[in-house]
Structure formats: structure tokens, C-alpha cells
Amino acid sequence: MSLCVKPEDEEDHDENTTDRRRIDVTDMHAAGVQEYVRDSVTTDRVSLEHRAGRTYLVLEE
Image (cartoon, rainbow, N blue to C red; front, side, top):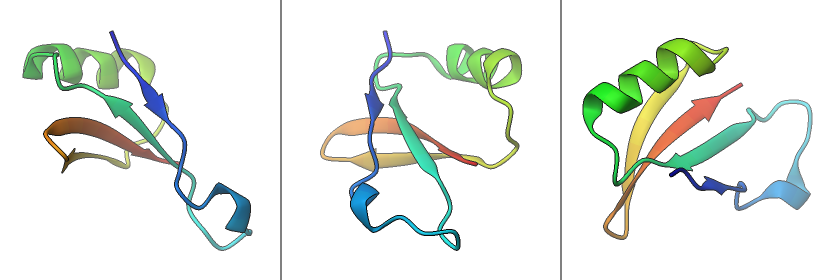
């Protein structure tokens, strides 16, 4: 199960900012995250972020 989180500053969006999408991957194994990125993500700019006890896959487009 994944949860998509909207960027905090969505209203202040302009052309020079990068679109970032966070997907909650806390309950996924590393192999599952790797498979998801390989099969479903269209960008190479991915990272993991840890916030408040949760782990998010961050996609920058």
C-alpha cells in the first residue's frame, strides 16, 4: 500500500521549482521499492526521505 503526499508548498509553485512527489514506502521491503522504481517511475531522480517515523520515496520530476 502506498500513500501519495502533496508537496507542502503547492500554492507557491512556479516554473523554477521542481515537482516533488512523496510516496509512503514505510511498510515495503527494499526489493519492493526497487521493483516499483524500475517498473513504474519515469524519472531517474529518486531518493528516500525519513520523516516522523515514516519512510518516503521522493520523486523529482
